[in-house]
Length: 218
Image (cartoon, rainbow, N blue to C red):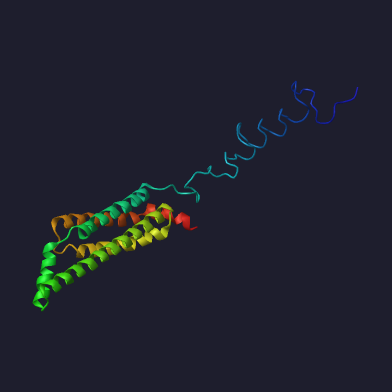
């Protein structure tokens, strides 16, 4: 009777093939999942993590992922419309509320310069018409600029934020100049406009808003 092949042990455990301590999965110390040191339920390899390349699973906002719209940016767009509403309301008195006292002062001054009463009245009406036209043009241009900024922000354009910053600063300066000699209603509107514009600037310069818009410039 011939001897068993070299390395085969007659005393091997039942159900195991020949070899030195072979396991059912094959290899030296192999685990059921295969590889060296692999844990059950994990891919083969040396302690490989759940992700293929050893990194955390992808999540929005990490590793250059998209940044979700922050609440401050939503509020920035809302305050743009609030400021627009205050701007329109502030212009209404000059459009629809005639100031007879001012008109009479103009007529009196022109009469003192040698104009007749009829000529002075005609000149005052002409000046009043020009002033009303100027207010209308300013109102339309202002509304257009507000809407430009608002729709630019809706499209996540950083130029709209920068444009709004410039207009907000200029608006605060010119509005404060208009406080001089203002009536109580105008004063309330002026303070409301300045307060909204100041908070708008705070939001526009916030880190959350700048980081959110920065991703669209890439």
